[in-house]
Length: 218
Image (cartoon, rainbow, N blue to C red; front, top):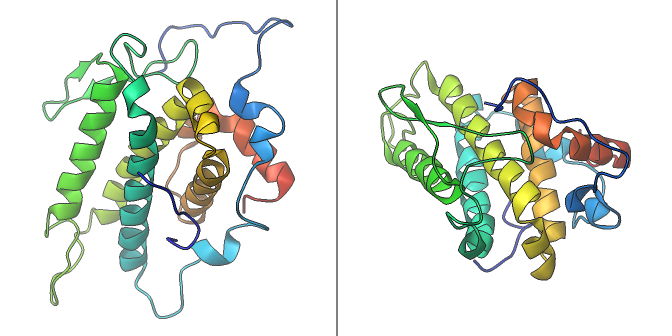
């Protein structure tokens, strides 16, 4: 995956807001930005399980890469993700993600803190030999694929927040092609191994539809 990217560093409310005819279309859905990509074709051959490779090994390697790349992209715009500008973790108007701690207690936190919690949680999992084994003779736990789905659920929330709140910064840094390609790769991989629920992608469904029409998603 590294050859494609080279850069330096609950639903809230019971009703969805109605979109008026004069509503401003999200920047990441506008031409030409939504079509910018550094990949030609789609990711089908890249996401498929290679022959003779254990599926859990393949999931682990890709989770590690996705985590690092998403972390890098967010890091490039994190200075603009402040408690003042992003007081809650959201993906556009009418949405809000609540953080659930180890005691299953949900709380509203600023986006920057939420994403920090996410990245720290994933890093802890990756460093845990019992969850992501790296030594010979150590097997993946029976719950490993469930853990990967939980990681994907959180990472796509980071994608959604960046797209809805900080895409203008991505454009200013000329990173939209790389970011769009990473997202397409992430969604394609998630589809290939059934790692994403429909409710997880609802806030980016319009972008996914565009990418499908462009043939970049598999």
